[in-house]
Image (tube, rainbow, N blue to C red):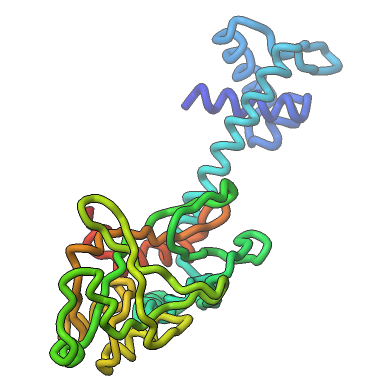
Length: 299
């Protein structure tokens, strides 16, 4: 503590080039400033100031030491500021971009709003590639890999794509035993709104990934209609497992071909690097991790 006190006193004296003025600003006497500087010089074994009856100026060694001390003191100030912000209650507008599957996150987002009523969510639902910094987003949620070095990323969890159908559909059309059996089934397919392409259904057999040609019964650019059509017994759909937890739990949908669908896709939160994450964004990311992927957040 005495060392840090000496650094602070030296820095103030070096900035003002006056022991008297430094003492006045610090609430101590000019003599106390001089003694603190003398102790510091004795510990370092060199002179930090050229002193005369009329002036005080830094030696070359003093100038070098001042630059280092200022960085240390600035780091302390920033650390104190970060701690103060981290303890602040989350509040204010939180601008978030979520992919089109974001509508399936609404129960979790609603739960977040109930727990943090002082945070106003501003939600953009889109699969487009957004410029997180230029577009002014606090947090962006996306699937897949992240490559932008300007962004900090955190994997909230992983999900798998599962193939689901209603019990009534399977009773009528039969349960596919192999991916190739899908050729005789009604397939509800997803089209990427950004590219216009159909999402391929990937399978794994013997450690190798492969695809099969699928018939097309219906196409949608969002996951929700596919789930609704599958619940109505109109075909099979490939959807994220977290999107159909409720349907799988109540039996309105069941999974098929689970032995062939082993992919795990990361679900990420991204925010600008180089700045401290505000409390409203931090609690939002933590909340989603706990409630969307509870089994992973416990690990």
